[in-house]
Amino acid sequence: MDGVKRIALLGATGSIGRQAIEVIDAHPELELVAAASGSQPIEGLAPLTQSGGDLTELLQRAEPDLVLNAVVGFAGLAPTMWALEHGVTLALANKESLVAAGELALAARERGGGQLIPVDSEHSALFQCAQLGEPESVVLTASGGPFRGRTRAELADVTREQALAHPTWSMGPKITIDSATLANKGLEIVEAHFLFDLAYDSIEVVIHPPSIVHGVVRFRDGASIAHLGYPDMRVPISYALTYPERAATPVPPLELRTLEFHAPDTETFRMLALAREAGERGGTYPCAYNAANEVAVQAFLERRIGFLDIAALVEDVLGRGDWQPAHDLDELVEADRRARDLVAVAT
Ligand SMILES: NC(=O)c1ccc[n+]([C@@H]2O[C@H](COP(=O)([O-])OP(=O)(O)OC[C@H]3O[C@@H](n4cnc5c(N)ncnc54)[C@H](OP(=O)(O)O)[C@@H]3O)[C@@H](O)[C@H]2O)c1
Image (cartoon, rainbow, N blue to C red; front, side, top):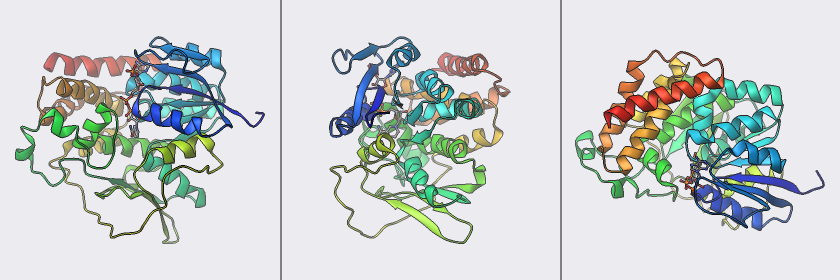
């Protein structure tokens, strides 16, 4: 590298993608060499661009130093695997690929020998705290979403618009619904399991409405290190793109205030408990959880099902199959498809 980091940005038109472009534009040592979207036109954004199609072909041509995978959903699997397999640094926002592919992704990283830097704010926080020692256990914080404190009965009739009104983060529609059901925190439990090689009972979730503390790592000597900051994705994006430097961002320094924490209500927000169960069962249970959730969230966004149906459908899918481990990507893709089909017929 001649001091310039060549970046391929996948999901360039999304919430993370747009903020990543802002970060890249502010740093001359970061060069956007390739950009991709799902379907929106992006010609001219980078020397190489692509809308839809095989993302690994674009990466092959671009020869980046770093891939920022900000695609939403299982569609991000192929570029995640490509970067890990080729030893190219992967800045990962697309948590769904790591949740679904877990062991296969880690095996690819082992073979490729490259770096995997989380962009998810909580995991970026934990990654930064973990520079100080081996984590014994971690705490993931959750804002609780727009329906924090509600009962199940009060959630039966909530609308798409109410679910999309997140109190602290402005994000794409899929992750915003995931934040309302707490599936997002569920996916993050599995993500933390694979990123930090932690048993599920060493990964705690607490509700922290202001989203100021992003993560806490507990060490064996009784010390805990927390990462604090305003909820602004430009911070973890900048950290991942400029790692191991810590580049400046326009985000103001934090003013301390009273911070509150509560236990999550896993009876009302079933998606959190279901993710933990799926993670503990292993195999392709996390893949099935993710796939069923993606299809159910889409159906909710299209007003074909109610809010509580999302968890009911996912629970049904997890109970229906024997979600055996996938030995290769073909078997993983097949498990994903099977779970999607099960939800599709029910919606
Ligand atoms: N937003 C956040 O603050 C945040 C925080 C933490 C983690 N994340 C994670 O980051 C990822 C992206 O989230 P987001 O909120 O930025 O989503 P988003 O705003 O919905 O953007 C999704 C991006 O993915 C592209 N895309 C969709 N399907 C694709 C496909 N089949 N092939 C290629 N590109 C495709 C979209 O392109 P088109 O515009 O052409 O459809 C768009 O650029 C998710 O995994 C999410 O969980 C997001």
